Amino acid sequence: MPSISDCKCVLVIGSTSGIGRSLALAILDLPSQPTVVVCGRRKERLDELVASHNATGRLKSVTLDVLSERNALKSSIEEIVNTYPDLDAVLFSNGIQCAFDFTRPDTIDLDSLECELATNYTSIVRMITFFLPHLIKLGEQGRPTFLYPVSSGLSIYPAAGVPDYCATKSALHSLSISLAVQLKKKNVHVVEIIPPLVESELHGCGFPSILFRLYCLLTCALVQGATQGLSRFWLTLEEYTKETMEGLVRGDPYVPAGTAVDRYKKFESGKLEAAARLYGQS
Image (cartoon, rainbow, N blue to C red; front, top):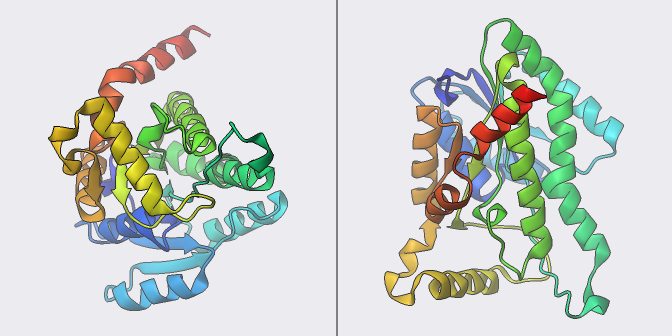
């Protein structure tokens, strides 16, 4: 099974902080020595990242606003592909998280909701569409290529305090399954990364991150039993990165970690295979 160890050049979108940043640096450290292109809106953070971790010369950066107008986004992606013709993997870690209380509909900020939808889902669909001609071309030449969407354990069952966030991640989860089935014969491998609750910076709106973490911990405690300890529900960024990289290097078809592993086994096991059978019948 092809894996991330086969990649020559990996673009990590949303890599100025948190999970994206940590995975980008872990990929840079692979024995296969790929080029890693970190990508995000905040140029100063990208510059700091490259300056502090580029002893090998294999860490590059590019600024990109995933909410750019459609044609502008397409032009930006074409420029990235032209600059890095060996690009054979794209990891999508861009995302924000907003809280909405639909018991008080007058408080719902639809601009924030639509921004969350665009950031977490629509922009990724657009970018995948724009990257695919290049990745399919490489795949047809015999080089395995990869799309790595980062969803969430909340795509499997939601936290009601962040309903739109969970919905966007569920949409990305479903899309990942369908694309994995469709693109397999094109030698484009779609590998969904499914984080649990991770101690990291998540930029969003309307809900202080510490309160959301406490909400999730309380929810998990009620569901699974409070005596199990917080470590059962929460991974440090270091622990999460180690577990996820192990799955990526193995070439797993999907990569849950922490509590998302049990959620996936309970609710999602066999779905990818069932989707493949259904697609084969159409």
